[in-house]
Image (cartoon, rainbow, N blue to C red; front, top):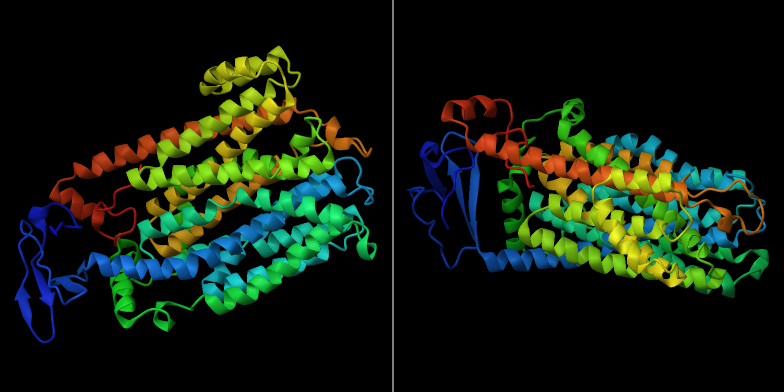
Length: 552
């Protein structure tokens, strides 16, 4: 395997030496292949006079090790995150059954949005605490906490109580995603973290499927059992499941690679060697403090660009996931029909998300894939909004808000008969487009923000922006009526327009960011040796280092 310099032009690469048992040998020149030894899983190389380490790994041994780690960790983490999403969105299905809580006016919009206020308030403290707590313990504790709160939600008797428990549920869930990000960094290289994190996030839309099916079975089958409404049993069962899951999570997630019984000594050696070689694990080995990591993330323009994308995406995504049953109900379906029909978009969205993720990983490209998903939802929202009465002013605003809206009007022709099932088909496409963005976007963040500590803080900023969008999106589908059929009286013109415009803005921001990354990569490729050395000073292999190349 050819040796490539990680610090600039090959001609400037320092001399290499092989670290062996009491002996030193000359390393191959940069123009030759590194020799492989059949009875060694990896060979260790170091740059003389510098703390650089390079390894030559046995590919089959690496694949075998990664397979073991994936099979052990990913199912547990994916189920944990999926359970968190279910407990977040199940309120959208339960709202159709909450006839006895005397919810009036816009109270339900506040019940939806207050979750995000709790999430936003505790996001930064959660990331600070995470620096001092083992991630596997943090994840288990978070699940147990929001599981308990979900269970208690089933006993709420009025809107103020629901608002209170939803706020604390947001507080409890604020640490689950940063905990997963931090835990993955103990096991995978930067690129591998991006792929694994995206796989976990790809199950997000499936939460609506599970919520819809559970509500269809539980709400109708257990209504008035024990003096509780069917909606109460939804929260009780999901809370009990989370408590059981927290126990299994604590038992199955190992503290770190050194303290495992399911990895062989060779597996551990390869895993740790690969992490040592990975740039991002050397990025902050110089002992920078938490304040420095925070300042680096806060001053990084990329973080705020990603945050702007997450904000505009979050408005549409959270509005869609929380109000999906309401939107289906607006098509004239019965409540029980709505519950199972709201499950189907999640299945389609999960499959499409995985396919887009596979394509993104195969081509190692994020920007176009993210924009494609955004365009998909923009077109479908344009199509869907045409199926309910709209004004010419809104049509004009939508078509100028995003160039892709022009293409969207082609879809209007095929849906012009305003049949509810055509509306439902357009809704599935919209839902799919919204949630296909999430795994690609956050995996894009993972590969382009160097350093574990900085990435953790950057992720917190970006997730906070997304939840600010959620707080806004929760108020889009609202009604001032207090009758039993309030959800059919919502004006859908305004929320669809806002969702479409926000997704159009996200697509444009993604295109701009992709162009900026490509420009910066080209600039770094043109650096002279002197410029390279000057820019490298003070940046030990983080994303500011000139050897770093952004994934576009």
